[in-house]
Image 1 (cartoon, helix red, strand yellow):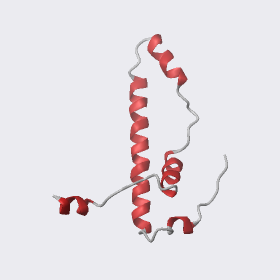
Image 2 (image 1 turned 180 degrees about the vertical axis):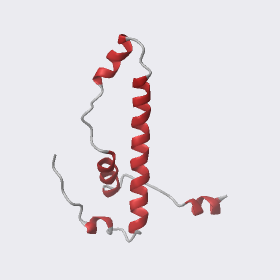
Image 3 (image 1 turned 60 degrees about the horizontal axis):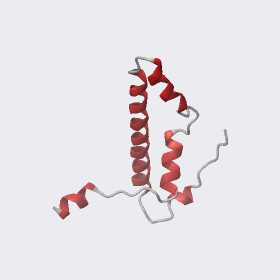
Image 4 (image 1 turned 120 degrees about the horizontal axis):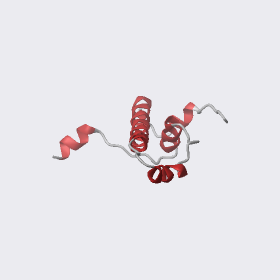
Length: 90
């Protein structure tokens, strides 16, 4: 496993609030975890071997959700808006 520290300057490059970015990253991580738990629940409901064969193709050596969320955040793939912006538009 290759572990590297994230440079803090990468988080500050857009004059955005660091706390806001951490919260957005944590929320994205929770989304990833929730989607994986749905797959696990489906796996637990298996009753016969034919259904089990469908799950043999699942890759169990996957990245941690925090790693995926931070990569998406640092590469600019995540977009978010404030809930106060939604209320003003109504």
